[in-house]
Image (cartoon, rainbow, N blue to C red; front, side, top):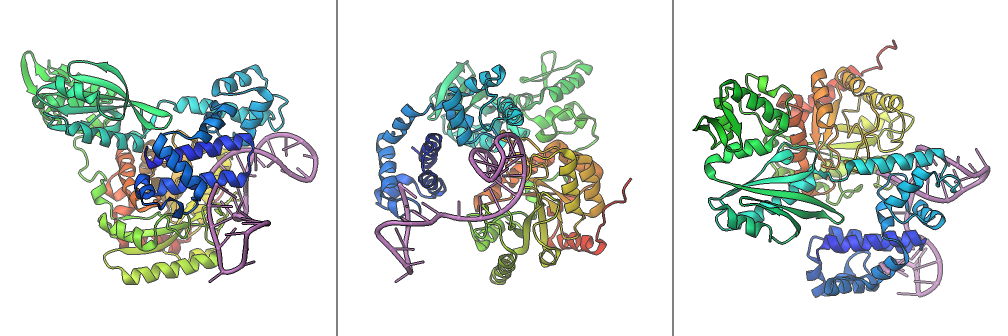
Length: 583
DNA sequence: GCCGTTTTCGGCCCGACTGTTTTCAGTCG
C-alpha cells in the first residue's frame, strides 16, 4: 500500500460522497487528506509508526484512524459502505468533460444511469432529453466527451510509460544473465502516448530470463510466454494498465533487434527497400546477404551499410529522414538546454520556494531560470495581485543576491483573458524580465476567437512567450481550435517565442505543430512549467518532442545564453509590434 | 472532517464561463 494508493482511496471516498450530495466541506476534508498524503515525501507507514499522522496538515484523528485501518487491513469500512450505496461505475463518469458530481448524481437518480455503458445507451436512445440541466447543447457536449474518452482509452502518456519502463528496466537488470536492457518502440521514439511497452534485453540464455520476468512483482496478468519473449499486463495507475513485452536477444544481433522493434513501421519499410535494392534482407536478426551477416551488432553499422546516416529514434517516422545527407549534429538535446523559463513556487500553486527551484535548476546544470507565477484571475492557483507580484519580484532579487551560479529572472505567467486583454497592465509587465502569456479560461471558444486572443497577446511588447498554446491535456482534454499558421506567422513578426510545454500531460505545442513553427522560422522555447523541483526533470519529455520536430539548437530560445535571452526580450520591447494592417 | 493567540462552534477558497433552470447552478482551473 503506497502513499499514492492511500491518496487514491481518499479521493474515491470524496467522489462517492459527492454523488450522495454530502456536505461540501466534509468532502473537501477528504480531498485535503488525499493531497497531503500524495505530496508526502516520507513513507506513510513510517510516519504512522512514529505516531505523527495527525500532525500532518489536514489530517485529524478521524482520518488518522482511517489511514491506520487502510495500512493494516488494506481495506476501509467506509469505502465499502459507500460502494454499497452508490454505483462505483459512476466514478468513471467523472472523466467525462462537462460532467461533474451533481449532474452525474442526477443521471443516476432520474434515469438510473450507473455506468459509462448506461450513459452511452441513454444518449443513443435520447432518454436524456427533458432532464433538468440537460439541454441540446449539454447533451452534445456529453456525447463528444464520451467519444473523446473512448478514443484515448488504451493509450498511456509518455511520462507514465517512461516511469513504468524505468521500473521494469531496473527489475530486469537484476535477473541473472541479463547484460543490458533497452527501451524500444514508440516510447524510444518519444511519442506523446504509447499503446504498450517494448523492452529489449541482452542475455545468452533467454528462457530463464523470461520465466523470471513474468513473475516480477507488480505484474497483474501474464498474456503470453515464448522461448525468448514474454508479454504481461502492468498497472500504470489505478484503473489503467498497459501491456509490456520483453524480448531477449543475443549481443551479436542486438542492434538489428533494437532497430527493428523501435520502428516505426513505415521507417522500417523504407530501410528494407534500401536493403532489397542491394539484394539483401533486413530483419530483427540482421542485415543479411544470402547466409552472410553484413551487420547486426549495432544500429550504426546497419544504417552505415545501407549508406544512410544513423537516424535518431525520434526522427524515425518516414518524414523524409532517410533522404538526409546527414543528421544535424546540433539536434536539440537535454545537455544543450541552458535554462527553464516557466515555473511556479509556493507564492502561487507550486510546492517549493524560489531558492529551492533555483538551486535544483543549478544542480541540473542550468545557467538561468525564470520564476513565473500565475496572475490574479487564476484565483484558485493562487494568482498574484499586482502589489503582491511586485513584492515577489523583490523576493526574487533578494534570493539572487544570496545565490551564485544561477541567474534568476523574474517573470509571470499572465492570463490571456476572454476579451483578449492581459490580466496585468503594461506598466507592471514592463517591470519583469520575461513574460509568459497563457490561456486558462474560456477554452470552449471557436478557432477565430482563440486565434484572436493569442495574436492580441503577442502584440503586447512585454509578452515574450505563449505558454501551452493549444491548452490540451493528453488523454483528458482536446486542444482548443487554433489557427496554428497564423499564430506562427505572428510569432515570427512580433518576436514572440512559442512554448513546447514539457509537462507530459501537455507536450504543447505538440511535435507536428512545433515543426510547423520551425518551418515558419519561429523561436520555440522548451519549458517545464514545474510546480515542484522534481518536475524540472520533465524537460526530457519536451526535448523528445522538439527532436521529433527536428528542432536544432538555434530554433530553441533557451539553448542560448542568459544574455541572448535578454536581447530577445529587449528587441521586442524596442520594436513595439503593432497588429498587422487588416486585409 | 479539520481547525483555533479572535473561536472547542462555526467557519472553511476564488472567479469566470456556460447553458439554460431567465436569475443562477454546475463545472473548471
